[in-house]
Amino acid sequence: MTDTLLEIRGLEVAFGGFRALDGVDLTVGRGELRFLIGPNGAGKTTLIDVITGLTRPTGGSVRFEGHDLVGRREHEIVRLGVGRTFQTSVVFEELTVLENLDLAASFRRPLWSLLRRRRGVSEEVTAALETTGLTALAGSRAGVLSHGQRQWLEIGMLIVQRPRLLLLDEPVAGMSSGERERTGELLTEVARDHTVIVVEHDMDFLRRYASQVTVLHEGKVLTEGSVEQVRADPRVQEIYLGRAREGAEDAVR
Amino acid sequence: MTALTVSRRVLSGRWQGPAAFTAVAVLALVVAPLLLEPFRLGLLAKYLCYAIVALGIGLAWGQGGMLTLGQGVFFGLGGYAMGMYLKLNDAGGDLPDFMVWSGVEKLPALWKPFGNPVFALAMVVVLPVAVALLLGTLVFRQRVRGAYFAILTQALAAALVILLVGQQGLTGGTNGLTNFFDFFGRDVAADETQRGLYLLVAVVLGALYLGARQLVRSRFGRLLLAVRDGEDRVRFLGYDPATVKTLTFAVSAGMAGIAGALFVPVVGIISPALLGVVPSLELVVAVAVGGRFALAGAVLGAVVMGYARTYFSEELPDAWLYLQGALFVLVMTLAPKGIAGLAANVVRRREARA
Image 1 (cartoon, each protein chain N blue to C red):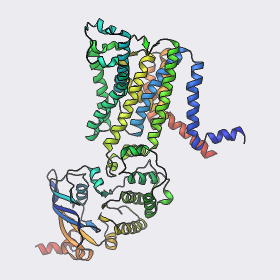
Image 2 (image 1 turned 120 degrees about the vertical axis):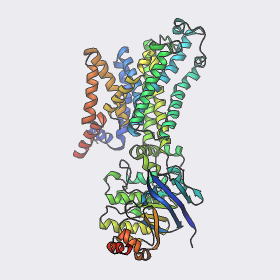
Image 3 (image 1 turned 90 degrees about the vertical axis):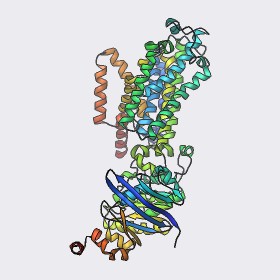
Image 4 (image 1 turned 180 degrees about the vertical axis):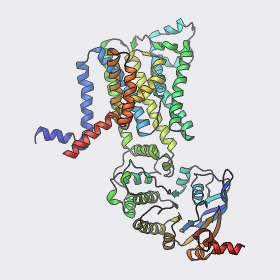
């Protein structure tokens, strides 16, 4: 068993009367590539929001490498080594691809040292440009990138921060099949030396790239396991894959 | 190589900025003092003081997205710090004239340290920066932004005016501080002093412009743009946007304070009417007209609007207010990047043709 990186216990989030997360337990080991799936409203994004400090939970704990993340501010959590992307990519359009990466890579520098101009390109930024395949676009404004390129730039901005845990929120949503393939390769490459949690809807993508899967349903963890195990689970088929729906209803009666 | 190709080479690429800066500097430091009569030179000095405030607004608003409608507050703090020193210096150990008229018998404790020129000059920068740091820390940490921040700064300007007007014996009330005679050993009204002051204002503006430009081009400047365009995303890069905004706001406040202190000997007065809501807004309009996304645009806007105001006040006194409003609406709808944006378009088109 690998050692634990992220440990979530009894996590609860309520928006008004709606319980978005209702006692979630989740353990992610160092070096894992974990997929988080579930139908709309299952609480996947809420879970990521809680881990990264965007949403305050009403109960439960999130421990990351011995630190309690609940109640910390977003940038402090990033500084502990948790990075994330968003469903709608937000790169800085006025800055060039290179400047976007450089800004991400500079976040541990003391503030006063930022007053100097950037001279040259650091090794990690060069490496990230190569990994994401954006080297040729380094000098272009990020505003001109395609949707897929933006997502890769975001992943690149995560990598240069050397986080210990990466959270990717639907990285292939809205992508063409070519872009999905490229993203899958990128993901495999990133997962080689990072711990990654991916929220994803796309079943094809899941089948091709996932190893460990956690299924969320109505704010609770429904089941966990390998792709095959999860797919074979009739409850998952019922709520998520939308198959055998009528059969399941019959069974309940 | 002909002179034409040389000049074309100078006017394009990386020498364009330094060449333009040098040209403007020669114009301001050599040509203007030779050509302009003292009265007109004094007016230009006043506009350049406003241009320093505009530079700060360009930094906070254009680069940082903080629409500050209360720069008059910081301008006023700098101005009053300078004015208090000059009044005490002129009084030579007695009470300043307006205090005698208001029936004040003993110099208020608040005034005492301002008799020291070093302390007063330090306060010109320290006071505005301290207020901005305090306000920024309180406001930006709570994620107050956009229109709410704008209204807050405007309310601050209104409050300061009420405070100043209400404390007649302490601040000179509506009249403010005026009737200055001596400026560091020179007759403040003499042409020679005024010419020197003009040059001082121009040099300070130039230095602050270069400093601001360096700031904008640094990593901090990139970060500031990022905060402007995606504050929430910046948080997830591990930076605290509140710190970035607070520091920038403080820099812009410090600039306004310096401008206020220079304004006092140049114009000979600092009063609530010069730093309230209306003058604060007029400067924001000037920055918008000049082009808020370029520092040079902000400076240009302040000078152009200053001249326009003087010209129309002399020729068509009733029309200026309407013209100013109309100009603002026109710029906002037709050229949101202001004069600087239009100029950049022309340059780009010419380069595309070449």
